[in-house]
Image (cartoon, rainbow, N blue to C red; front, side, top):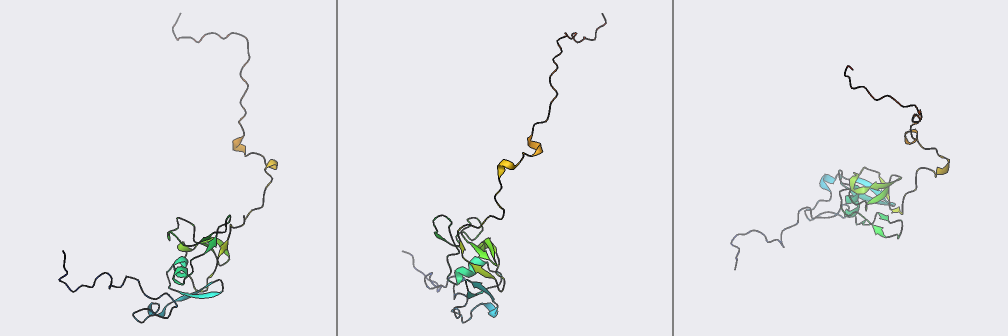
Length: 163
């Protein structure tokens, strides 16, 4: 059986790194809110949220309790930040009027306006009738001269010897 002879705190009593209050929740266990009171205000669907400069939009939204940033186009299922490194695209949202912004890869700026993205974005181009298009020039075959159809026999090539 192992016994502790030191006076180190146990894991259960040690505070977790980064633990504390969420931005805008009135402070952390050490008495402070955001470090040095430095924060930027972003707006998520008409709700003002305090965020730390340098944080991603996804981190700021999660810290404020917002876990859904979009609904899928087919089933309407709720999605939110998942991988936090730009690989999964679940954190897409409309940021400052631009759809399909990866919130985990976008830093907060004061005054940002973020909205949930509902379904898929619209296409930026109009539909084109492909039957009216001609193929590109590089796709068309290059004209080749027809093979010679001359029926007269050709002499065999010389072998270079003097006969």
